[in-house]
Length: 248
Image 1 (cartoon, rainbow, N blue to C red):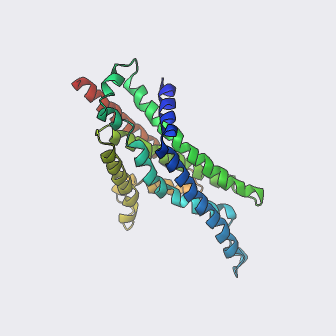
Image 2: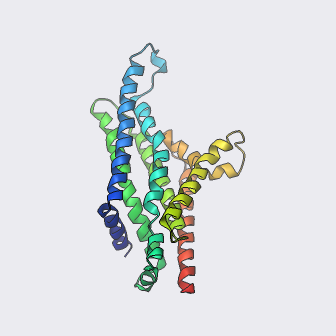
Image 3: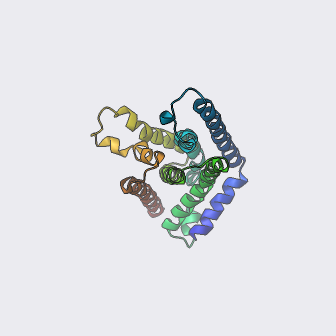
């Protein structure tokens, strides 16, 4: 049943103009940074630079694309997640969803997987763009795969938080604003507390745990953080819907 709900959500995103517009804008932005990265690479590496100062094309171009991706997705996810549950609440169709032969876990996971599947298309397209460098240069596949995994986990965290916020209100616009502010705060914690690396609050920064992936490193602590973040907000969503169902 999770697959059926996810398929329904995915179909709904593709049948709406907003879904196509967001997908097109995202790819336009990423393609622009990709082409700028390739152009800047040739300009920089063809200049008066010592061989020991040069870096590979994978890190140079990939860093340009993956470096901007978390901030671009910060604007896209709230717009896509705001209607997941709040629209059901606003149209008063949530009781019908509760009465269906589905568990709350299946409902929440189905909506979450549907949204994440849509955004994963962007991750795959970004990967295809950067992997195309292999047509004319030797690239670091490990570096790219680490970045893709990190971006996927980051997007899954965005979606989990957006799903929870969408379950707390019946106004999609309010859900989008709250999700954006919450994600922005989790992004900026790292920069506000940069002078105190031992601060416990800074450990909640999404960017702090994404940065090792952006350097091509895999750390089980960062993977565990993202997984716990996702599970926590999905669990909160289930509990919120359960409370709504008990209130009738």
